[in-house]
Amino acid sequence: MAKKIGIALGSGSARGWSHIGVIRSLQEAGVKIDVACGASIGALVAGSYAAGFLDPLDRWARRLNWSYVIGFMDVMIPRSGLIEGERMTNYFRQNVADPEIEGLPLPFAAVATDLKTGREIWLREGSLIDAIRASISLPGIFTPCQRNGQWLVDGGLVNPVPVSLCRSMGADIVIAVNLNSDIMGKPRVSRMADPPTGVRNGDNPGTMSKWAAFLNQTAQQGNLTLFRHLFQEQPERGPSVFDVMATSIKIMQDRITRERLASDPPDILVKPKLAHIGLMEFNRAEESIEEGKRAMDLMLPMLNDLLE
Image (cartoon, rainbow, N blue to C red; front, side, top):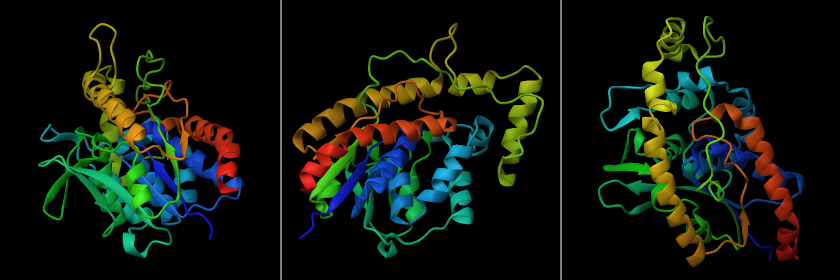
């Protein structure tokens, strides 16, 4: 009997585009994926692959620029997060699809965290978009997602690289992707670009133009205080609000990932080198995808040995 191969795609915000490259490498090598699982951004890519939407996601990610990314940020007066997330989920529902997880061509599951109990929640049924939205709800950045009477947040808080979930779904060989293996202790070498000045970005979704227009206006006025305070590190003031929250979570996730992988190691561990890409730099998909493919290509000989 052929061995079932599962992919466990880890959390890591914008670095998660490298998961696309990992899958591309496996596809080019003729490796059949039987199970797809993910936490946070890994849930987005794994869910898209399981639903047959990886090609559109790939094309869309490569077209992203910073102004377009800003269009999805429905920044609000802080309640339980800076970003509501409705613009992004509505966009995917309108332009891609929202199938039921049970009806997907490939078995899929996402990891989320119950905000009240701290329990690890496995999302294996219902709306695909809702499951992804719950799994990517980074605390303090995205508001929690309400689902079946629970308030759910980022799955990376409890299981950043969901090897255990992948095995529970029948995978004999688990290929895990850790996006944060080279992050801790490394200096930040890049910064998010400012929004474009003086022009309207023609690529912005129409339903998101108000926020983009506001940022363009503030850029023209030389007043980017809100933007920089929330999302950009400033040498004279130190880390931004986002950097403090995201880096704190990253430290915690790094420790949890080490413990989880030590207790339940995957058969193949892929570790793309992504320290140079910031957590919100979704506009750098091209280089993230190529690095993911490079990292998986290096592990193909080991995978072939396991399959033989």
